[in-house]
Amino acid sequence: MKLLENKNALITGASRGIGRGIAEVFAKQGANVAFTYNASATAALELEKELQQYGGKAKGYKSDASQFDQAQQLVDEVLKEFGTIDILINNAGITKDNLLMRISEEDFDKVIEVNLKSVFNLTKAVIKPMMKQRSGSIINMSSVVGVKGNAGQTNYAASKAGILGFTKSVALELGSRNIRCNAIAPGFIETEMTDKLDENTVKAWRDAIPLKRGGFPEDVANTCVFLASDMSAYITGQTIHVDGGMLT
Ligand code: NAP
Image (cartoon, rainbow, N blue to C red; front, side, top):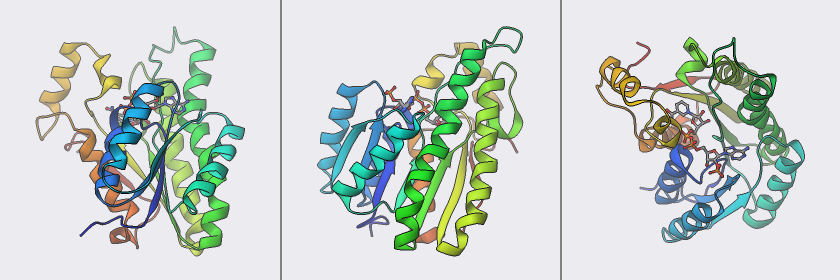
């Protein structure tokens, strides 16, 4: 049984990493997939073709999630092409790590804009059509760092903690319209974002994880399938940790 048959999903930042993994698993589960990228046009085109092989509709859009007007325009275009948006996954994110002593105002603002403002931009753009159809599932990609904090990541941790407050507030505001909003807090998922870390840090992280491995994009994608599908119809306002037990 395919869990997302006939559902239309919009996923931000799917040209690489976790977003790409979510797009692939969603297409396999029968969803039609609209996804965004910011710079990786070639990878996006390849993904579009790959997803279409699963038989559903798939289209990549160049859209900077941190820009309010671009988010509105994107949602209009996706609605025109796909008809409805049943699932929104706010996945796009960046890091610009530095100790607070050294971090620039520009690097603080940029991470907040791409990671947190983007969640506001896209959510604001989809809620009207979701309210009209009286259903929707919104999934926001936070991080264990947003729950626990992390030295050298004040900007990133603040953006990811902000997502948790936003998620719970949306769940409270829109539950009566049958719009659910949940967050995922991945731990250490091996992607290009974590490739930037030095090998000793990565080894120390793996050793400290109860399941003794980093996560795969599919681990996060499978949790998204659950939160997007009717299997989680009575779950809203929650944060699911996908971290191999890291914060336990
Ligand atoms: P990644 O491999 O660096 O991929 C980031 C994706 O976001 C890319 O597709 C990128 O598109 C897109 N993106 C960046 N800026 C954008 C913008 N302004 N507008 C639209 N798209 C944009 O990162 P990842 O590891 O897959 O992480 C995905 C999400 O999970 C992020 O929110 C991250 O904070 C979160 N997360 C990751 C981990 C981890 O261990 N990897 C842990 C916890 C949380 P382009 O290719 O076009 O630049």
